[in-house]
Amino acid sequence: MSTLLTRLDELRDKAFGELKNLTSATDLEAFRVKYLGRKGAITGVLRELGSIEPEQRANVGAEANKLKNELTSAFEKHQESLKSKSIPDSKVDLTLPGRSRFLGKKHPISRTIDDIIDIFYSLGFSVAEGPDVETEWYNFDALNTPDDHPARDLADTFYIKDNILLRTHTSPVQIRTMENNKPPVRIIAPGRCYRKDTPDASHAPNFFQTEGLYVDKDVTFSDLKGVINIFARRLFGPEIKVRFRPHFFPFTEPSAEYDFSCLICKGDGCRACKHTGWVEISGAGMVDPAVFEAVGYDPEKYTGYAFGMGVDRITMLRYGIADIRYLYDNDLRVLRGI
Image 1: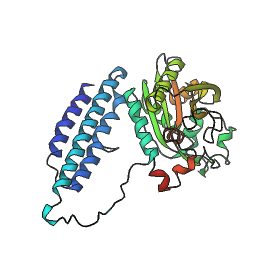
Image 2: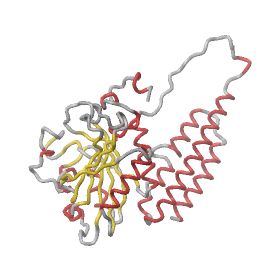
Image 3: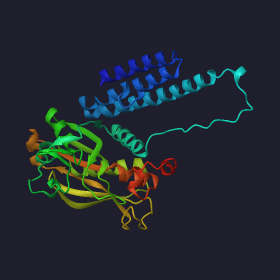
Image 4: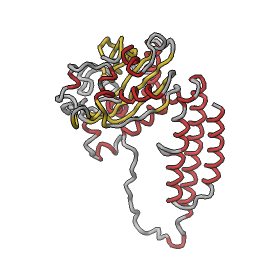
């Protein structure tokens, strides 16, 4: 932990030293990407949380988020300061009509993914990524999915050739992570997924998921429920309700599906929740021992839980969107109001 905290201190000194010397919009953008971007220096430190002891991750994550907030605030102030100095007063004609410019912002799904990552960072999780194009081994076989499972049909999955396909979930990232890391493992895997779903108010053939995995000694189903409940309340507030329903997944046992109460209709029923008052988020459960055996973990020694969540549906709940297709139609009349 001391190494990561030292790096954060060094980043703070270096970043604030560079910021005060920036004099152009180009330099500002390069600075933002270097330190505050999705692949910037601060995020780079957060991605290494998995390499330190679990009890130390929360402290490092908190310090990293504190630095990010401080640097973002200083960056925005410096940016405004440069803007005010760039207009020579002698050449400004205040009688001319103003020129409006369209101000862009992040897509609602991107904003939701960023917030999900921030919440799980604070809980000691790190982010793992993997390819969109996968093999059957990582997408199905290693996840204990039998050859005759319906998800493997051509009618459900986009196959490129033979055993090469577009991933149907981000669970393959869990397999790749466990293959290359010994327990404890605590990661989330956000990313794009693909299924041959017929588009409707709550389904799309292209969608986003965030899956989570925690493997260690003595991990229980109660730990899983606690994490999901904490996440839901931090993202939506104390009024959100969570329910778990028994289900079956080949890669978890026992398995469950979990739902969030519909914030669009407040439980009265609407298209988004199929008039039930609940929105299905995804599945969860304890990792099946067969999955541990596939990656070389001892199922007698370790236990773990896995969960998933549909980012699109969570975005719909957050912003009161009744139809998932609105997120992909690129209709600015909708997106500007979110």
